[in-house]
Image (cartoon, rainbow, N blue to C red; front, top):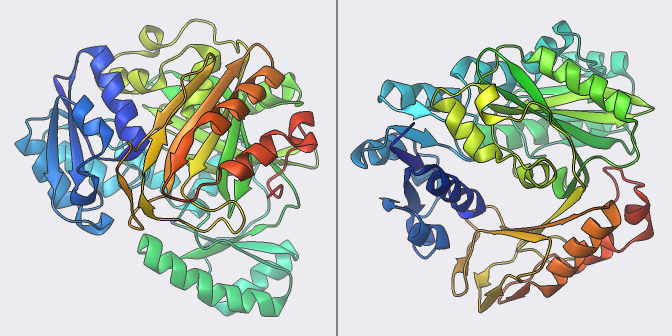
Length: 436
């Protein structure tokens, strides 16, 4: 087992990794940008490491600075969390070259699935259903030819991106021409790569993802998550298991995901869109997911400790139960520092930030009272996870947890979350990605 893990991240995920390290008896070193000097996970970690600066490019995205800080801290492993450098193959290689273990998959897995058209080809070759789409589009001529072949409407997407950034729906040739320039510019700015491609547009699909865990030899599925409630193509509410879908069909898709990732050696998630009674591949995330907590709640599996143990050389049999089954239901709501009407970010000082303590409610918070919420990073403040014997009980506990969470000083999306959780369509399980 490792002796000291460097955490190259911030917020709720950094705090979660500190907790896993403590559980395993491992020292944790928490990196922090100057703006995060009051973050709660710094006091919970064994040690801290300053990354001078305020911007992500100077701190959490600065490969040289991160590796230098990890080496200076005496770390023998590094956990990237999610976001930032978590799916950067060059970073994974640089960590290994510096004599540390990257707690994630080998770089070739990140390379394979980091570029979306390459990922689509790999999954299609492995027998996973993949909907109509294009290769990377070199110019407008290739763009229009691909759109004609696929059929309007289409969805234009960055090939190297994620998080919904730059995605644009086009129903006409003119809309597509306009979106092509805009999406390429956004992709170049956000990901350093202007490559884009097309996918067939799906009206009101469900977003279903499958958790997989591999040790380099064996790979296992750890059930699915429903992630259909989104804004700007980014998840807001997730749950497990997915409601109202045939278990046999879900098991078939999970088996296909596991088979496609034969030889995988960490946590990973195969994301799909379910429409017209068919599953279609969306992408693979080669990292810990934000919404991993709902899977942990219904299976009793600590995915973060499992990820660390596998990186240290443990096999699947040592970190997973022989039979993985769902026990009850879990629903997660993400509390963002953004208003509930326009869903625009809000900044300011958290004059009050008091998570509730309630039966059946788990809080993953990345902030503390008195801390500043800035425009420099993602506006996620906390995750509220309600667990119950039934879906209705889990929804109710999540709703109460969101309502009881006292936050003042910035606008939040709590009112929106309560509206959705209490709505008839959500309670009935009539979910799709266009709900918001």
